[in-house]
Amino acid sequence: MPLAGERPTPVAPERVAEWIERFAAISEPDSGPGVTRLAHTALERRAHEVFTDFMAGLGLTVWTDAAGNTIAEKPGTEETAAVGTGSHLDSVPSAGRFDGIAGVVAAMLLAERVVTDGVGHRRPLRFVAFAGEEGARFGRACIGSRIVAGLTTTADLHQLQDAKGVGLAEAMAGVGLDPDAVADARWSPREWAGFVELHIEQGSVLADAGAAVGVVDVISGSTRLELTVDGVAAHSGGMPMHLRRDALTAAAEVVLELEALAGTADDGRRITVGRLEALPGSITTIPGRCVLTVDIRDIDLERQCATAEDVLERAAAIAERRGVTLTSRHLAEASPEELTPSVRRTLIDVAREVGTEPLVLPSGASHDTQMIKQVCPVGMLFVPSRAGGVSHSPHEDTDFGDLARGADLLGAALLRLAR
Ligand code: HGY
Ligand code: MN
Ligand code: MN
Image (cartoon, rainbow, N blue to C red; front, side):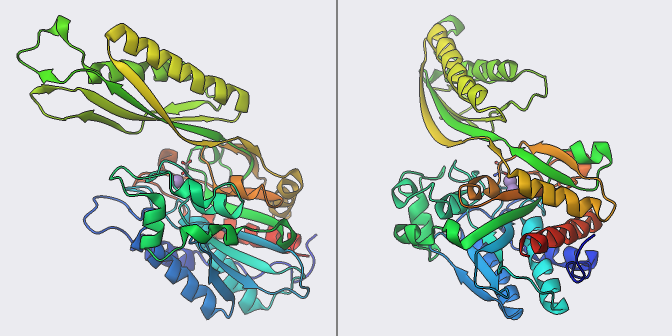
């Protein structure tokens, strides 16, 4: 049974709703449906300011590192390695209200409960808002957490740019961060004893199973490529069909070939072409160039690497047969990561102690926790996604009560790790 005073009073669903909506309001105006708060924009920094003000209001020490991650600390009874929780504040374009924000709001309200209830803990507690988790803008995910984990350096930041040609380092400097000083942001394993992230599932496994909470065992790896198909732009009326070198029809065949390669067995391997741009994009011109992105996910590293090679081979064969050329760019790589078994057991224990049987499942989505595993023992809690499990969509939905209960379990686990 839990030690007396180890669980703060429950988080109120109304408070969860209030803060989910407040963050949702920090979004690009006139950007269409959903929330748009892209990595390394003034809007993301505004969200970090809201997080900072809330945590400072609780009397916690708060700082933002050169990478734009914001960390709040509540001292424990001993000056020793901390345990932490948190998630990300940036979004994809036309996102939902919960991806990343759920874990940040849970951290905030948990901090509020621990401070208000005067719950004691030996280890310091740290509450984190990561910057730049979504790969949507620069192609590489988890920029802030990769930096603190020592997986991304200043040099890397100067190699990435967004679809408008804005460099990542330039974007960071443009919002007051310091890409040249990110080495100072690195987390030392001596300072961290554990990290647990709460996130929405972004799938329908929990909802379909009627499970109130999930505990993640493996986070999928991801390989992200950009393919460019070059044919010959020509007049859509003047050029006979048999003489064409059409970049778009070649790209279309590649897309369907990759769908066939992924297959339909839900074995954890997923291939997505999320962006396809046909140039010059004129109704009366045969596209001379097509640029497409390929996102390969897998829980099996060997198969993930083999799939990436297979993708390039198949695309090249189609290009050759159609008389167009193919070039590729490797955007980002993350290996599948098994989360720490001892943390997983703690998460399962605290759920069972309140009569909740958690479902253990892999995460198809990548998360900051995948990078933080390089620093300390890690775990993840999922709360159910409703609306068929859609995410990266304005229709993303999670019950505020489920999220509040997830925050309570997160608190119990964190305080157990902080004993
Ligand atoms: O792409 C992902 O899986 C995550 O949303 N960054
Ligand atoms: Mn996401
Ligand atoms: Mn996320």
